[in-house]
Length: 387
Ligand code: SF4
Image 1: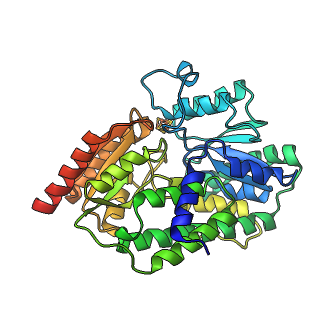
Image 2: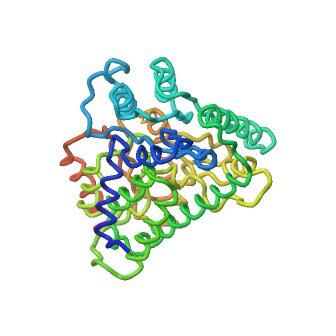
Image 3: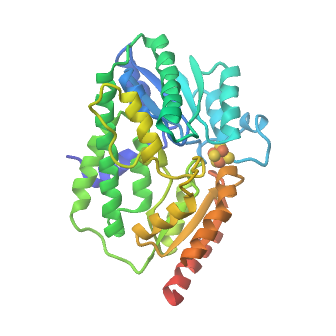
């Protein structure tokens, strides 16, 4: 078994390898293997696993890549994320990827799918839509058809037939993955000083670049290490971070919030890995239906999710209560339409529940955190002194 420090170092390296070396090495070992890149937030990775593929999460270039060509593709006022992605695609970072999935989260990502198509990146480029009708017969059928299109795309590349048995096996593996992640979040909920939010971030992001089997092993070992008491509790407040579901905040920003006296006990950084709440049925003759039902009945909330009859503001407050949070930090990418449009409603719900909140915006390549640290520090002090 590796030491915790070895695991954390490995995860940090994997998380920010913009060349996806490990995934490409995995593909090179067997001719029938394929790599399917996907953008935030969520896609049903199980169907890719069943097609002998690896779903690779592409979470942005952050501050690790200079944007030159990407700026020519997007207006200067929109978020940074798609510019970094197109820069990676026009360079060599995403070579050897067989296909790309663009979840329907906003217009920027929709346009990105068109740019990949026009630039002929990968053998397929699919805009992956989600049901907005939550009747399983209507929305579920629609979702199944969307998944079938992707299965067909993959079959044309490697000729691997996706079977019910293969999807059930993948569902089992991802169920274990979600359970392990939740167990670590629950330990951090009880004793947040045992593992920093930055370490947790690296562990989850690493999982998007390796096989689910390998990630499960890492999670098992991390869990083993943090079950024992370690570290010392500090006089910090407990916060929930909301709004960072797509463009990812720089690590320095997460660190600054922690150093300013806040334990981040819940977040939406790598939300796709935790999208489905609870297990998905893994022994059915129609696993696509099981995946569809899970999306309809077991999805978490996010600004990129249509939430008729199940308002996000209320779900955010419920989550904050569950994690015994003292406050909410709304932390969204600058000009992220979905997050910023939802924010007033969510803030109103927090006010109604008496939950203090602050907000700021970032770019994935922001390099200055002094102001954010001061703001988070003042938030923490004011709660400790007067809440
Ligand atoms: S950060 Fe927001 S606006 Fe930008 S691509 Fe993601 S969801 Fe769209």
